[in-house]
Image 1 (tube, rainbow, N blue to C red):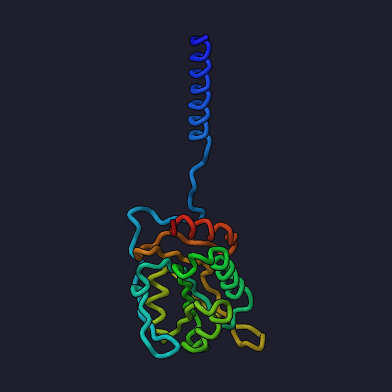
Image 2: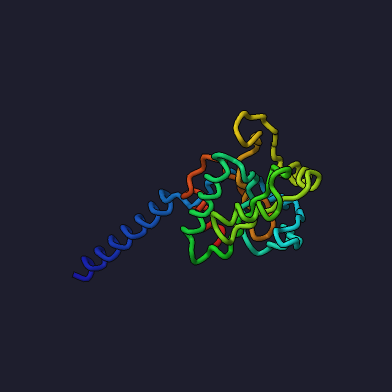
Length: 200
């Protein structure tokens, strides 16, 4: 009887161990879904622009927060409003941690976008979003640092011209490093997944 109980105990233990091993082997670890920068992660180029109130905004002052950086313009007919709306959805999906994420919108259309106009536009999507603009000279350096393509395209519409531009969101981690980037067609759930991983 004792041997039978012992055998049953060992058998049960073996089943538990096999189940644990299979779980470890078959369970895919959580991973980032955005396009990742290689390690060691490069430091995000710092920049300074005056905000809507005329006060200096420095990217480096956001240390400790995750920054979602997007370049666009307030007269954009489709890509920019869609992207900012999706970033708002991503923050709404993590309400308890949203304060640890800062969305920054930088204009690619300085001729039409003043700092107050950029802020007013970004704030329509979420009151915490920061909208920035500046002079052509100030912005060109930032565009170049982040590899942003920008081209004026003449249009017959009432807007006069459109701006063709890179439509990617860059994720800068809390240590100020370039970590991930997202193309225009990235599902919101993928951005949420990555934010949750970084905010653990």
